[in-house]
Image 1 (spheres, rainbow, N blue to C red):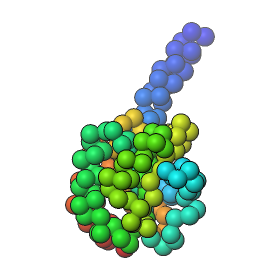
Image 2 (cartoon, one colour):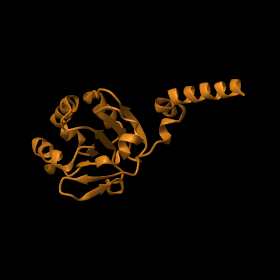
Image 3 (tube, one colour):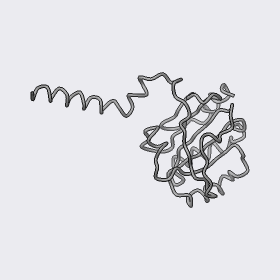
Image 4 (spheres, rainbow, N blue to C red):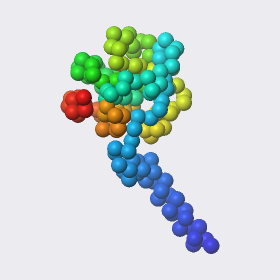
Length: 168
């Protein structure tokens, strides 16, 4: 009986070791679609994934307004923001709505109708969905909502834009 329990325990440990990253390796990339999410915008309104403009690619960046790596990424993105005009851009964080107001002012996000900035708050739905343990995280979906590519560490903006052009 103890031998059987040890085998199950070893199997359990093995599964726990591969589970956080392993599941995505065993599924086809094209089986992933935009998750149904919602976030609160800085004006208090709720925005959800069903409100995204149809037949447009999506760039979703999960960030923290006070994260140095996120600031570097978003500075680079906003220098080339007009290359994203034909794309839905969602910038989502877990930080409180109050933290978004200074961010939106800095990047003047209100003048870009294709950009939505919001917080998922403490629901951590997207954070858990993508199994995130740090920010920033960038994911790109094609016009049909299928996963095209993701960047779990640094996002090379020029590479992302080149990939995105092929999806438009």
